[in-house]
Image 1 (spheres, each protein chain N blue to C red):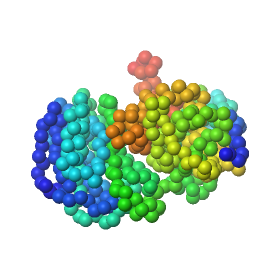
Image 2: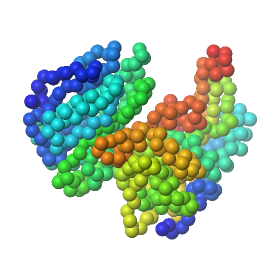
Image 3: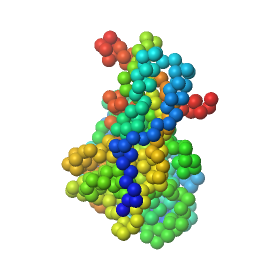
Image 4: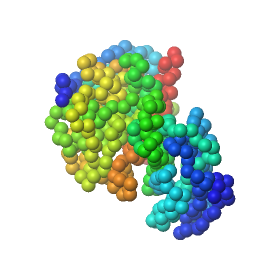
Amino acid sequence: MVEQLDPYSTWGTWALERFEPEIQNWRTTEHPPADVFARVDQWWPRLEHPSERAAAFLAERVNDEESASDETDIWGLWVPNSYIYDARHGVQRVQCFFRLHELVGKQPRVVCEAFHTATWRSQTDADLADGMG
Amino acid sequence: MTFNEPRDGIQHSGIQVVKRSWNGRRPASGALQHLFMEMDLAFAPGVAAGETSDVHRGVDGDLGRDYDRIIKSTGFELDLAESTADTIGRIERMVEQCSRPCTTVSPTVLPDEPDRGVVEDWLLRVRFAHYAASVKTAVDELSLIRQDPLADSATLSVQRIDGAEAIMPATFAFRQKHEDLDAVETVQRYVAPMTSVNSVIAAIAARRPDMSDTKTQLLLFFCQGHHLANFDDPLFTEPIYATDRGVTVDDVPGKPAPTPDSERALTTIGHTLTRYGNLSPADLRTLVQASMPWQLAMKATTGPRIEWAWLRDWFRRPEETDDPDDEKFTKAEAVEAAAFLRSRRGR
């Protein structure tokens, strides 16, 4: 029934593209703490495994997915263990945005769109969570 | 009775039913272009009775009047071939069966003679405020469903009302007469491209060759649900039916089954397999049977078909999309993320 088995989508490794320039872009523009940057830089290669992307959320959908092959929907993830504690902003975490390409006959790949530091819990939420609220 | 005739309200078990009629005649065959549906709401104690909310749509996206309030809704199928008296009778019987306040629906049609029909994309704008336990929640949502042109009905739904208890999706199916289907079929431009279920099955088999047919059928439920929730459009065209053992989808026998030629479809399938693929059939069946779409279909008097609107609403429920304990983005975080991506593109 199927011409060619495609093990990549479930267990296999996907090619990762544009992660190195985008993580450097994030470092330059948003100045994350060095330890957080190191953790994120250590994490992103794991995205070659689909299971690592199980919590991905649709961040932006393309209007016409058939219009251009490189313009697929953008998915987002919180980078695990990327917490940044800030007295003013509360708890921040790092988001990773990427596109997926897996049409049969092509190398399945994850293409990085951006890294971004965003507020995960406000200071109020953080106070409540630790009993200080 | 005419469209503008004053309401004839009757009190029934705390639920107000307002009789309406079809303007004295049947709508022209198939058109449905100017179909107004007025929802006369039943209100819970503490909410002023007599308020009404209107939903209507126009040909060019004229969305017309807004809903004012919806407390709770229940499904009602509008059958254009049915007489007014029968329609009202069904409404009343439905209300009698409700053990709690619910919304009643009475159909009306504009006096204009509708053109011969096409089912375009159906738009339903719902703006409502929900009042419960002295908490006011205002929601403004847009619901859009495109349906297979070959299907015999189009389905609109009111999205979940956050904060309300035991909300059932309000679904209104506008069934077309058989003779109109050819006209609908010719208007392909209104229909988003979709994949056949055979292609989806092929993609599942390509990724998990060991998958049993039973498990594949159950996984189709989740593939379709998540795809509808994310993209509004169904992943595949064939209907899903609820069964005692879960769900079933009729594949197309003998047809070749290439995997979908769509990144979006493949992503949905891959994501579904990652999330659900290692669950046992019993696990999957438990999740299906606990779901509102399956339960609604099993109770439906018109057959066990699971409507897309039910699926979409279920996979968009707050527990799925807005759980702060989940690693996924909450709705607020998703909005911020979208703003970031837009700003980045603008650089």
